[in-house]
Image 1 (cartoon, rainbow, N blue to C red):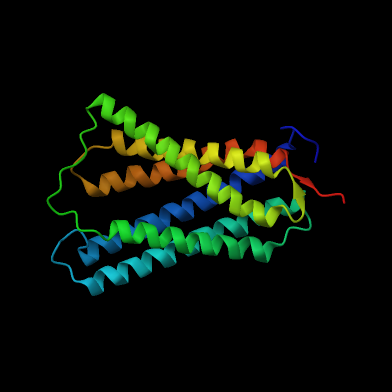
Image 2: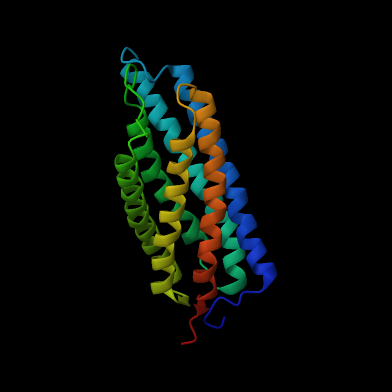
Length: 224
């Protein structure tokens, strides 16, 4: 694959479609987590530790499923560019990422929030600060994930530096889009907030895939 962004249109379409399909799965897992939190009354301080532990475990499983689906869908596209892609390692690495991410999300979301006040997004300096912080956090997470992915890809491909940098950029963009949706969502109706949030996850997933096209175009099979 020649260096640059001149990808065949069919390959671009397949990459974005694969990521869009994964984003829908991710949103579905997000809804499942939302309804489980509601069913277990996780927001209440009176909810027992057993229910919280069950929720954390369920959130972890959902995350593993989501990341495994991502790995499976993207492997099909990557193997067009990199026929020697070790797809079992690619899937295994993403399952581990899903495990760690799910545990983190589960632990955070299992905290009781009953009685807490919603964020005041009308404070523009505060909102701008949070957006910048989220962009930076997203970039750090994207670079970390891209670096782990590169551990698999570098065995058979060149272009890992670009892959990690663009991964950071794509995660930063998607983080800002998801947070932006939460900022504009009407406060007070959790279901509406969740609907808007998961719609943003889908849009952010597609946007991230478009950004990653540049990294995809810079992947080249190792020749020696």
